[in-house]
Image (cartoon, rainbow, N blue to C red; front, side):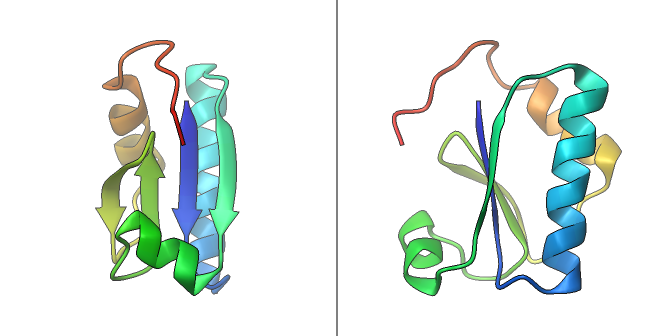
Length: 86
C-alpha cells in the first residue's frame, strides 16, 4: 500500500503525515508513506487543497486534517495486499 501526504510542509501537513504513520502502526499495516511537497507532483496527483491523503493513487482526503480513526477506516477498507503501479 502506498500512502502519500500532499502539502507544503505546514503544521497541518505534518500532523496528517504523523497520523498516517500512527494509523498504519495501530492496524499493523506495512505501507510506503511519503510526503509530497512539490507543487507539480501535487498537481499530477490531482490535489487542489492541502493537506491531502492519497492511497494507492486515489485521493481519499483533501483540504483538512483527518483523524487517526478516519485514516484507519480508509486504510482498512482498501483491498489487502493491493500494489500500486505508481
